[in-house]
Image (cartoon, rainbow, N blue to C red; front, side, top):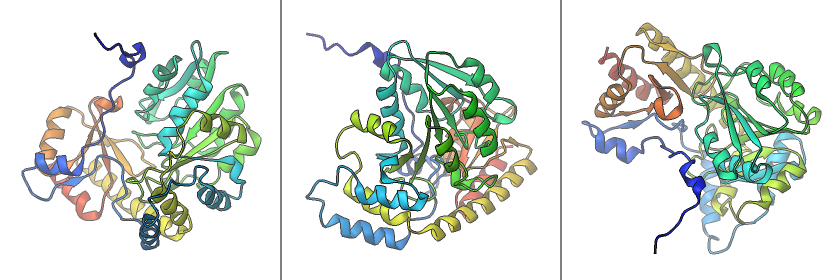
Length: 363
């Protein structure tokens, strides 16, 4: 007997995560490999967060709160909203996947820019919808006008990644407001703001004001980046109670584990720590981008914690392999929709210097 799998599996792309640190060390010709491939924070969580995790670990023989009440209350208090407007998840990816399942079916359309976050191509095959990709405009920025031209009566879900992953470009909130105003109210718009704290165009909370004006808007955020909790996987959405109920209906119970809930509840209370991480990132961003241009490379105007680097005449695969041998793991652009590019996370100053020196040796 042959096992038969669902036909949709053939449409779902293979996800290629950033190289793990162990893999980076195995490939390197030096024992001290560094990982700049996954847009993680180079700094550990706040000490109070570590303490909260340790306390929570004493009770892991019990299931976590299925409603994540303490975490949702902490997020709601921080953003001055109601817990009923907060959906939490096992990383922000889970809400994206749940939104596709809850909102879309055969005949619907999911619209997003490309290249953008590599999870988006999973959504349409998962729910039977049709995906519509709109190429980025000049400067690796979302072509909002081009996206509006593709909106039809079948557009059920529209996603804008801002700042965009993998290019790091950011659209100010004023333009987002105008764009959302132009999209029909029947279409759910997810503004994926995983890197919003790192941009300096607007206050990160500016887009929260748009929620009251646009009931079809969802803001998606994460604790994986500037809070330093990538290993625990906690994301959340600021949304309507209806959207929260919809995504909760299609997800497994207890999707956010007890340690993750405890860590995120504590982490959001330490905004000074977040501000310090962002400041360090901006300093390193300016340093790395200036050095890359001195080396003759073109980069996108990053407002995130990573660089999108055009390799020009250099061979992408050879550069990635050479950097790996030098003990520097970076993300190749091809799996992210940008052949001939690299995405490189900003690390600490020594890590960034290590990358820049290794890259300079290739030119």
